[in-house]
Image (cartoon, rainbow, N blue to C red):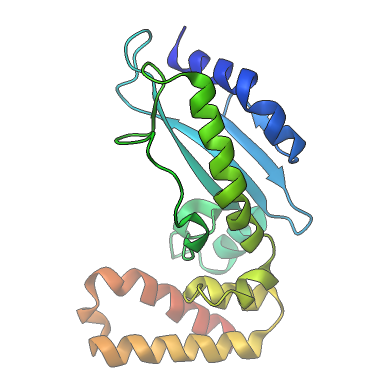
Length: 211
């Protein structure tokens, strides 16, 4: 079997029914589980294979948990076309507290090794990590209001969340605060180097809210 067939067979036998009971649907072509929330967010559990995967020799896949918003992507592109959208519509992972303590013992290097481990063990590990960690992460990113109220999120995402919650005054105040903080710390935009991208996003939100 090809690496993809090995993975999908393991999912069908040991994981699919559990996640479908949670409201997820599986796309075999994309190797993703997806669940759309009432607020419009799409929570995803995806599988990415190693570039060196070879049938009957190397079958390694890592699992990632993300939240996507088509509405957020469109809003960004419509209002800030000059700034590349961070994550392509996937929400930045600025709060990883839900993943603290997540078991990674079966992933010493790149993801799970399907040639060395029993598939039932791998799928059970993914299921346990979903129940104990990813489910909480998805819950914290299930509505813009939750992001606004999350004290662990303190970036341009919080500004955007305030905008989507129709709180322009609070969004403007936070954007001004962040803008000033960056300039006070770096002195000028030319000195920001790696931080310049985030600053340009904050600056764009400031101009947007003042227009």
